[in-house]
Length: 383
Image (cartoon, rainbow, N blue to C red):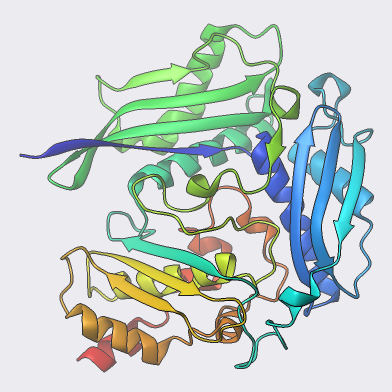
């Protein structure tokens, strides 16, 4: 009998890094509403009392970045001066410039066969039949915990909670399958004056047990605000920056990640769009029952219209030869940068929804890369 442990984490919208991702993707969405051919590479930095918006944006759109950033911060929940960051009064520095013309040469017209990749990039997609979401269980539970923590705060079920928070779960696997949770970690920012005993009792009852119940047992350890206090949080306690939660955004630490972050980038950047395509391919292969788990890797060169590398790895769980799987996927899925954008409808303002609780495994949100609509095509082609 083989046993091993796997750990995954997630963060709430009020976490400083995740705030930066949300702001960047909100800006991207607002630009795409007005200009589908915009080039956006937006970076955000958050700290005590101020936000810096930087990067390269070339667009015909006009966006009031100050107003939009303030509204986003208020929506996240930073709306009181005693939080240390208040969307009403936060200082905002805009340091946006245009996209380099040397980069722009390689992109050409968006969503066409001639469109090249906006930069070089390595992208990873993954799927496993471990969960209904076809995702690793650890990252699924970690995201559900932070989503639940956010919901009980916003719905005033636990009215003393503040926007920052994190989760971490450690699963024990037996012969490759998840058996039980050995520990659950929650960091929940809270108002002063609330006892640690009340916070622990409430979090276990309202957050952990509804999400993790089937995997809890008498030996599971709970770590709730393990220092005994978490009043100071968000950008007051730590700076935040886009792209610092790549593993959280993807599949957890058991699966490799690609060469770049997602948030703030328009879909000509294959760091983002090809990662979505790789997930789409892997999910349909596993969804078709052709493998129990599957990793897809795609890499591109700037200006290139075809991948420089396309790998399908099923870790020996395949029911069809991997060469045949790859050949079938090449026929069914258009792997050109323009084709990816067109197939997955990536010029729509969908990106703020991706910025927190994971980019993958959320079929109900309506992301096109989470559909299993190519299962029949794959099974038909492979017999």
